[in-house]
Amino acid sequence: EDRVGYIRRLFDTTAVSYDRINAWMSLNQGEQYRLRAMTTAGLGPGQAVLDVASGTGVLAAHAQEIVGPEGNVVALDPSRAMLAVAAQRGVRQRVSGIAEQLPFPDSRTDFLCMGYALRHVADLRQTFAEFARVLRPGGRLLILEMVPPPTRTGYFLSKLYLKYLVPGIASLVTRSADARRLMRYYWDTVDQCVSPAVVMEALRETGFESVERSIQYGILNEYTATWPARGGSR
Image (tube, rainbow, N blue to C red; front, side, top):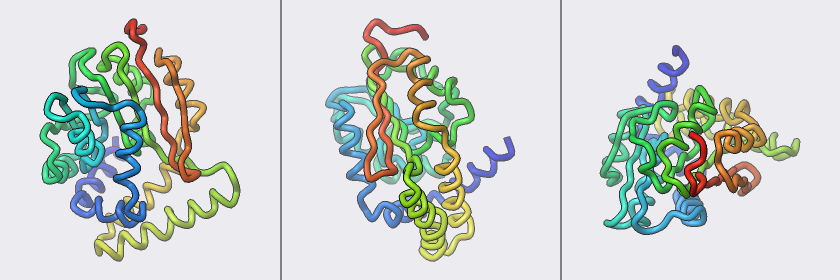
């Protein structure tokens, strides 16, 4: 509980600068990458979308453009300050909440996405059970996450960049000690994240089908899965 409160405070205090930090960190490629990932995963017009741990609403905003006026997008995040930034971005529906206890009815979502937040959840299987509960039969799941490269050189370069360079830039750009602390925590969670094999096995045990993983740029992982058309066992 202490850790959750501490991290939520960091997100709250850095919300107004978070997009600027991420733009630096991703070399301004992050938003386009997220957009491509969603379309590749099957997001289309008219769908109902839930963006879990939405943060400043990057995925949710792009999803609104894709689903169009016939679709529906909801951004969920525990940080109200982050959701306020999402509102400024144009995300229309915003709800405060956590992945382990989704405040939504069963079987109402066509497409559920989570961007770079799986490593923050307290209970992986409870989270996936909640994802399954709110997805409609045949619904699609997309999880974007960072995982350290398996090679020694890749790991060293990732650590150098994310643990030292990015926090330094964050502190310089925002003049905020909290921004530096948050980005140091960012690397710590990447470094200690649950292995991809465990994530994929947990998805299968929950009942998801067509569980797949792809890797981009050596560190960006995309997990995709489908909730069975028959509804599966919840």
